[in-house]
Length: 204
Ligand code: ATP
Image 1 (cartoon, helix red, strand yellow):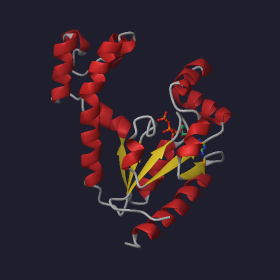
Image 2: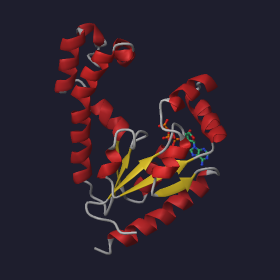
Image 3: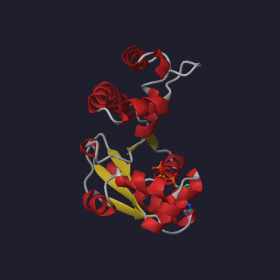
């Protein structure tokens, strides 16, 4: 395994697979984490140009009284309107990508981790030196997500349907952590992989 510079590990996995639990542990080992979900919220914070464009496009009722984006209303506005969805993606995707690239370039650790549940779907895996999949059997994925989010099985299954299937992810990932035991086991697996990544990085 050879890692090129800048070294970015793309961390992905389905809803509730344990990406955050794994990323938190990499962070505790000193690794910079850049999170695509956080990026998608950061680019529409009050004061950001994209929020002004969204309000001008959809009307100011797309904002809540405190000036923040009314996300459910925006989801509703683009849900059944393909052209509106495309407009929004055209606005946000370059900004999100820019935010992620900047934060990855500023990483202070020997390698950085890009967390994105849709890493392969958004093609961001091409930025990555290696990809790491947090894999979990479907029954555990369902029970953990339902317990965390207080969602029904149907709600979780609908989100799973919008994501790549487990087999596709397994076929695409370079490294896999199977998160089918307790958190102590997950942390041990993260530490082993961290050791490997550190060794490969220092070869340069
Ligand atoms: P999402 O894509 O929805 O953001 P995620 O992949 O980041 O999810 P986590 O939030 O890390 O998933 O994990 C889902 C839930 O399962 C959390 O409540 C987490 O604490 C729990 N969990 C993760 N791994 C384990 C484990 N090995 N043992 C027990 N609980 C776990």
